[in-house]
Image 1 (tube, rainbow, N blue to C red):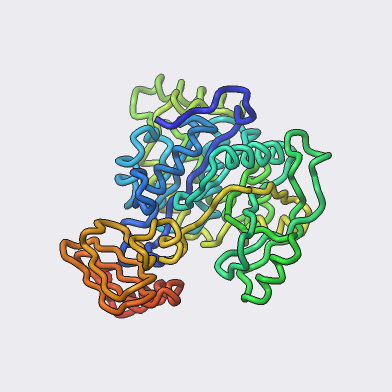
Image 2 (cartoon, rainbow, N blue to C red):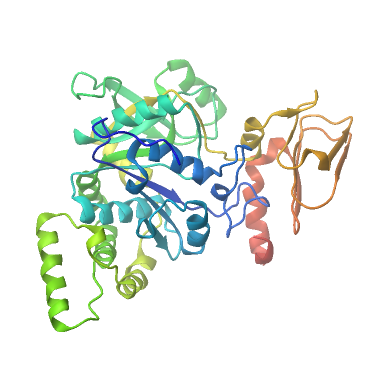
Length: 415
């Protein structure tokens, strides 16, 4: 079990959301649509990415205050990998609708269960973070800024002029205005992935940090901004969240009436004890079928964070811990130890790889055969039982283009 935070340590009103989605396109054929990268142990640590994320957050909030938003076909795998997670804390999406819908639905349900003044934080299931104490301190300050009314993000120190990440332009200090968040700063704006020259310019100013997509905010603040910026999504999410709070009234009339009275009382209080009522799965299915397909597919950055930053409503807390979103095979390579003196990285059984006059390769021997490298340099070799991909490491970011091509060719059997 992960280490759990003690009460009154700055996280007493904090609930963690883990959006666990993805199509498996950037690490294909290792990851697939039915089994995205968050279900894999890519560091050889003995814990998969989602398990490591859960451990990290349970240390702060406790296991009972963590929820996972994921696709319906990933529910069984999530349950198997996270037996500590309550079944009622897994919210299944029939089709992907990107991060705004996932975060908003989880927030709306948590607000109905525990009140709209709670603080929620969204942390992707597939990120690698090193430095648990530094991470905890950054989240603690982000929670303090969220209590003050800001949608708060955690900005990662840019260690290189990367073109693979979006950036946050930090503004004036908010430390004197927010108790408990001495390092918080106002966000001037979010900027998209830059070209190399622009990334170098950002790095040289010292005013930009990587956008890791971590957001912490009070539930009412998020829901109010969603209603302002995306009213149709807000209405749809509200209907679905209400269905999650419905009770199964298949009993007698008196029981049904008592359930209605209890539900009305909880609603008036703005708090629902999730353990006191049974979820009506039919109501959830009906609400999902009615409202979810029409919800706009849009990332949280675009829907809420970027427009709100223009209005001065977004804060940033610096995150000075190691972070990677494992966006391609080069990211995987950075996490793996070198095998031998020629910097070959192997994910899997090292005895399955034989090399001669080869260097700088990333090899995944995941099928039951030996991979022999002769004069092969700086390549990705991902060998699985039903698909083999070979590509230059320099083109790792283009793996998703191969997946798109295979999709157009109708090769759903290997995607």
